[in-house]
Every structure is written in C-alpha cells, then in structure tokens.
Amino acid sequence: MELFCDACGRQWSLERDLWQCSCGSPLRWQPIVRFDPSAVESGNWTLWRYRAMLRVPEGSNPVSLGEGMTPIVPTPDGRSWLKLEFLNPTGSFKDRGASVLVTGLRAWGVEEVAEDSSGNAGVALSAYAKATRIRCKIFVPQGASPGKVAALTRFGAEVVFCSTRQEAAERVMDAVRSGTYYASHTWHPLYLQGTKTVAYELAEQFSWGIDDRWLVFIPVGNGDLLLGVHLGFQELLVSQVIKGMPRLIGVQALACAPIYAAAHNLTLPLNKTVAEGVAVTNPPRLQQIIFAVRETNGDIVAVSEPAILNAVDELASFGIWVEPTGAIAWAAWNQLGKPPNSVLLLTGAGWKVLRP
Image 1 (cartoon, rainbow, N blue to C red):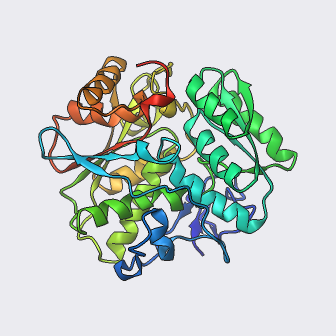
Image 2 (tube, rainbow, N blue to C red):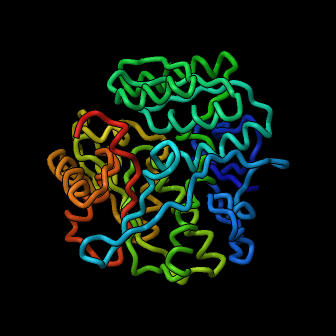
Image 3 (cartoon, rainbow, N blue to C red):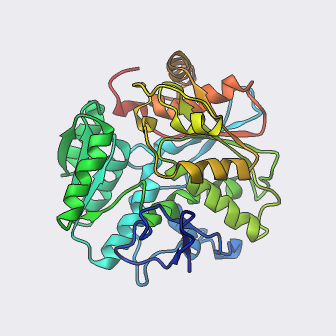
C-alpha cells in the first residue's frame, strides 16, 4: 500500500477515483520509492528524467510541455541560491503536478476535469488538459489576476467565477458530484508525485551534497509544493542518496496565515493579501504541513504585505520578475537574516499579474 491516511490509519493503493480517504481526509504518500541515481534518464531535460521514481498508473505515457529542470542562480551575496520555478511552461511550479496528474488522467481515460484555483494551478491544468484534449472547467475567485484568467481562456478552459476562494472550493464539488473528475492540486495524490521532483532536482544540481545544513524556503498555501518536496527528500534520504534532511521553511503571508498561526498557537485574522496564490483560509493538509516542517527541524514563518512588495522590487532590481506569491520566499529569507546554504523557491512569474 502506497498511500496512508493520518486521520484513520487506513492504507490505499493508487487508483482512478481515489483522491481522498473514505473518512474524508487527505492522503499522503509513504516514502517507499527507492531513488536510484543510475535510473535517471540523463538525456531527458524535463522532470520525466526521474520517470523510474514516479508512481503513475500502469501504461502511462508522459504528457510533457518541457516542465522541470529549472535553473538555480546564486543570491547576490553568493552564499545561497534561487530556484527559478517561474520558468516552467505556464509560469509556475504547478506545471510539475499538472504534468504527472494529466499523464495519469490520460492513462485512466478521463475526458473532463474540474478544479478550484486562484490561478496558477488552473492555468497549468488547463494547458496540459488542452494538450491531451481533456475538457476543463476551472472555478476561480473573483479577484484572480486578469493575466491568469486570460491564460485559462487561451487554453480553452471554462472559467467559473466565484466570490471567494472558499466558494470556488464548494462549487467545484457540485461539478464533481455531477460526474466531472476532480483534478485537484490540493487533494489528488498524483500532484505530489510531480512536485517531489523539485527535491530530486536540487539534490542532483548540488551533486547529491544537500544535507541538514541546508534550508529550503517554500511558499505555502495548500502545501502541495512543500509536501512534495518533503516526500522527495524523504525518498532520497531513505535511499541514502543524501546524507541529511534539509530544513524546510514554509512561508505564508501574515495577512492570511492559518498554518503559521496553528504551528505557533496563535489566533490571527484572515484577510486579503497580494500573495493570492497562498491566500488559503482552510488548507486541508494543515497538519501534514506542520508535521513535515517539524520533522525536518524547520519552521513556518509569515511575512508582512510591505515585506512582500519590497521582495518583488528587490528581485526585480537584479533582473528577476516574480509575482508576490513567488517573492515571499525572498521576504522570509531576508526576515531570518539571509542564512547561508539556503534555496529559495521562486514559484510564479510576474508577467501573470498586472500589479507590482
């Protein structure tokens, strides 16, 4: 059994209609994959170079638009690194999850999908669905960036506007109950098989030298990136490919920081934030996220709105344009005193938003 429910203890194997436990809780992968460096397809410059280590349905053929293998560049002080996840095909790390998920959907014969998203996840899903002629319906909060909505429309998705992110999450379930497949970046296990490849790439890019001296700064809303990275590093550690687990630093916007509040036993109001991609008021995997961070001796930190906007400007000052959500890793790194041996995941492209 590959999948485990922390709430009731039940174990599952990956199958077509399984996106949550029968008790209604999210599932997590058990780190039972053995990572074999010799199995890496060195001539494949996408995340599918790790195909041997990805759990996908039998008979799957990769659906790829060139995602993964994003570059790393040094920070101005030369002591840490930026991983440019915004250089994925549709401008965010979500392409990793979408590629693996849609690969599975095609193998299962799924013809129509629905998803609730503030933008990036929906854009990624609609692009990969379009490439495979899968019909796509995206439920989007009213305040989503016009650039992301334009991308959804360009990729042929049916866009359904909702008043809030929470309403989008509720209305998508009406479509699911009517028979549409729920291709959720928050709930579907295959998504994490895509995002875990960030850990694989970092280990390979640093010549398998990552260990517990390293910190990885990760924007967190629903946690699909942080949990995928945690899974990937777990597999690398169990396989003795790396010598220690890097510390994961989950980053939230202070204006909307339920995970930060829960991790630090605080009561905080939930307000709007310019970092729309992490504006999640009730993340289903909250406890999984906190466990993953604590298991690595990491932390959840929160950054203010001025710090986020300042981070966008600072990154732009040396030629990197990311959206506010993508800049919060930089803001947190600054807030913690710019610790060395850090990797900052810059998750979304600035050209997708029309504000600074």
